[in-house]
Amino acid sequence: MILYFSATGNSLAVARQLAERLNERLMLLTEAVQQDLTAEKRIGLVFPTYDFNLPPAMPEMISQLQISPQAYVFAVVTCGSAAGNCIWVLRRLLRKNGIELAYSHKVSMPDNSALAFGRNPNKQLGKFQRVPARMEQIIRELQAESHTLHYSWFGLLSWLLGRPAVTRGMIHCMGPKVNPAKCTGCGICSRVCPMKNIRLTDKKAITGDHCTVCLACVHACAQQAFTTNGLQTHKERQYRHPQIQLKDLLLR
Ligand SMILES: Cc1cc2nc3c(=O)[nH]c(=O)nc-3n(C[C@H](O)[C@H](O)[C@H](O)COP(=O)(O)O)c2cc1C
Image 1 (cartoon, protein in one colour):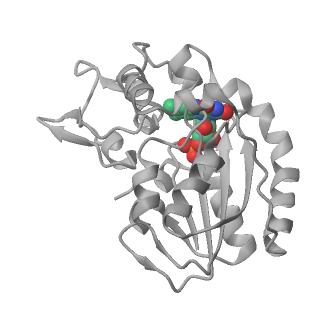
Image 2 (image 1 turned 60 degrees about the vertical axis):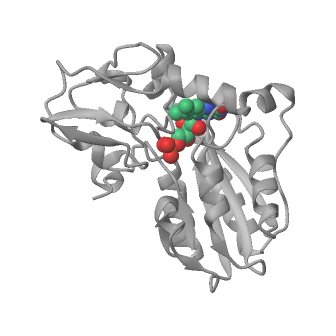
């Protein structure tokens, strides 16, 4: 079973390929937390890096997972370039539930947070050139049930960025805000939000208080009605993995 979390499709594309090649089923991590997965012999976790750490909502999801301590558990992290302490943090969280992380690796892809800093993720498509070789390595190692953690402890900066107060600060700054004048109430944002944190009131999107700053809404809004880090969204900076369609990311 491959459990994934994805806002703009990078992690979904990786999860899909792993599911296909390893003959496993795919499930959203947000849905998996409600399931009994103790019969699964192999569990893969595929998710993005945020601030060199796990997405803020992930630690709670990991602690709720019901998986067998006998399962072969692996993680594949997608990132713009550096996954930081992600694997180190994940391994500690899993260990609290008696689960040992057997294998991990990372895949670098366009950085979907670039638009929050006035840059364009679509200018980073060159990063895809190295993905096939990395995926083949990961698949080969997973087929052999390798026990290898490809990761580094990224030092104090990553640790500091993972402190709760810093995470709260990141959510405060980068958390998407809706411009009601631009919002047409189409509801796409509420359907791509993996946290189900956006609802429509009077045909306007309203964000709630459990945003995990994945930026799915910012990238998917056809009206560019969301700001992040106080920046207006430009259409050309909105990103989605080239093999993933909007409908693949819609939750309901
Ligand atoms: C809030 C936020 C913080 C991020 N921090 C990092 C980071 O520290 N290092 C990095 O390499 N990429 C970082 N990224 C980029 C994502 O990890 C990367 O684009 C990922 O592949 C997106 O996956 P998805 O398309 O499945 O959502 C960040 C993205 C977001 C939204």
